[in-house]
Image (cartoon, rainbow, N blue to C red; front, top):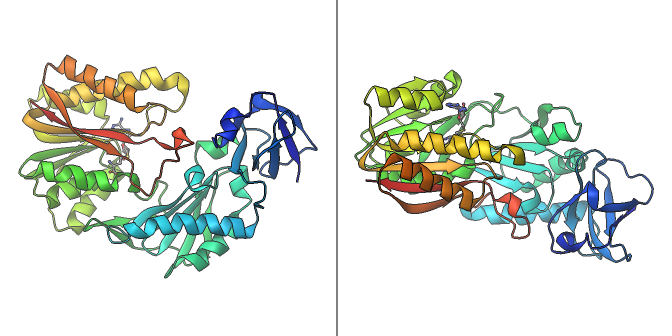
Length: 390
Ligand code: SAH
C-alpha cells in the first residue's frame, strides 16, 4: 500500500476522524497512487493516521475510512460496513419500505449511496474510490438484502463530475424495476426509478408524519411538491384540501397520481417558479391554513451561501404572507452549507419583515436513515422548522 505524508500540524482534523483531507495538507506522495486507490496516511513524523481513498484530481485529495492500523480495508471490511448500516435501518422497516440503506461517509464508505425502494436497490458510486467497488458492493448487497429483486446504478451528480468520472446508469443485478410502489407511514407512493430524477426523498419521511397532524382541517399549499409527499400525508391527516406547486409538469403529474393512489381526488395545481407564483397568489388574495416550503438545494458552494440565504428569506417571506392567522408554515433547507444558525436567523428576518408573530413549534431534521456522523458535520444537511403564524 502506498503512503501519503501530511504537512506538520495538518493531521489534527484527520486524527479527530474527519474523513476529508484537502490537497493543501499533503506534503508527499510515495509512488503515484491511482485515483480511487486505498492508501495509508501518516503524519510528518511518520505516525499512522488512517487508510483512505486517494483522488488525484479532486480538491478533497483523501477520503479517510479506517483509523485503526490493524484493520485491513478488504472485502470483509466492506461487508462489515454494509452490515452495520443495514442493522441501523431494521428499526425503520415497520414505518416504511423506502429508505437510504447506505449514506456515504456517515456509514463509513465515502462516495457510496444506496437507496432501497421496495425490492429494488438504487446505488450511486460518487467518488473514484467508490467507483472501484461496483462489483463488490453489488455482490454483497445481492446477498445481504432479503427478497431483493434488482440493483440499478444511477451514478450521476456534481461529485462525479468534479472527479472527472462520467455518468453511469444501468442494471447491475437481477431484474429491472417496474411498477415500484412503496409505503411510508401508511401512505402509498408509485415511483418511476427509470426516470432521470431521484426516485423519492426518504430524508423527509418523518417530517411528513410530524407536521401533517397540525394540518388537520386546514387547506394546505405544498410548494416544491415533487412526488406529493407532504400533500398525501396532509390529506391522510385530515387536511380539508391541498394545492400543489412545482416548476415541473412531470412532478405535478406524479404528485396527482400519488394523491389518486391514496384515494384522493385531483388537487389544484400551480406550475411555475415558486418565487413568482407565491407573489401572484398574494396579488390574487389567496391564503392557506398551512404551507410547506421544501425548495431544492439553493447553495451549492460557499460562494453561493449569501445569495441562497436571500433566496430562502424571500421564499419564506412570500409564504408567510399567504398563511392564515393561526396557521402553519413548514419550512426546509437541504443546503448543507446553510447551517442551523444561519437558517434560523433567516427565518427570524423573514418573520420580522412579514410583520407577523411567528413561533417555532417543532425543529425538523433529516430522517435517521441519513445519520449524521459526529466527526463529520458536513453529513448534516436537512433542517427545517414548523412555524405557527399569528
Ligand atoms: N417536497 C418534496 C421534495 C422537493 S424536491 C418531497 O417531499 O419529496 C424539489 C422540487 O422543487 C422538485 O420537484 C423541483 O421540480 C421543484 N423546483 C425546483 N425549482 C423550483 C422553482 N423555482 N419553483 C418551483 N418548483 C421548483
